[in-house]
Length: 283
Image 1 (cartoon, rainbow, N blue to C red):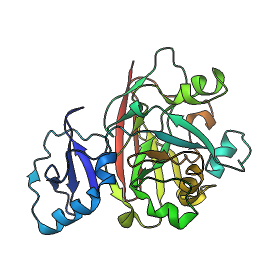
Image 2 (cartoon, rainbow, N blue to C red):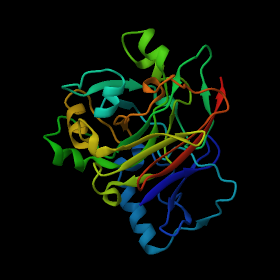
Image 3 (cartoon, rainbow, N blue to C red):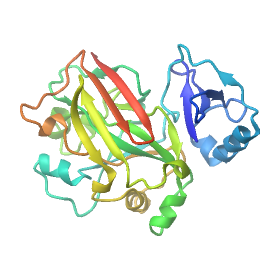
Image 4 (cartoon, helix red, strand yellow):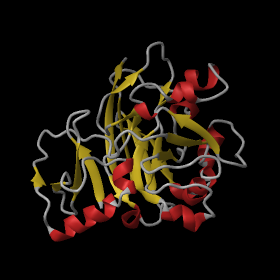
């Protein structure tokens, strides 16, 4: 299934996208797509309602698409997780996942405006595969256990301010947690539909110029490993989001470091998970 949330910010309603592109209202199944929905068997209820043909159709005309998961409890990120990205930044390949946190308030819709922070000179792009947790997880015993707690996947844009991230603090959070810095969606695609998470292509362009073209098979640490690893150090709750890293092609690693400026448009996609488009404004 492809689940999404539509409506004005703060007024989103849950929906499901059918294979032929129609939107069906899921409000009878749950009030929102969030941790409580996932923890209480919401995906199974949605599948049943979809199979029964009992869901009313929504008119998509003029409907804003929000993030497919209501504000997560936490957004956990893994840095330097693609070999080519580590190389372009001059970093050594990590022996353990590089983990940092991102303010959950950064999560916005896939087509919402993204704001370049005040005093920013180095706002950068990063297309990523996001994992959405569907069941409470602690001390998972390996890849199979990790797969069992994944509700699904989504396109994530881990927008970053490199000066804030790398020059203002030994930790990365300042450059990752600026407002609107994590467009998510358009859909939460359930794990059964995605299949092999290590066989997905990621793409990103800026103003029509291709910048990133990577593949999840190039991850240093696989999705299953990341989920299992994180569960050894924190409790993962339903609705939590994990950003799993970005491939090469970020502005930081390109000749001339062409960082983003107001008016720039970024388009990004991941195989089977849909696409995003944002125009950048000034905070």
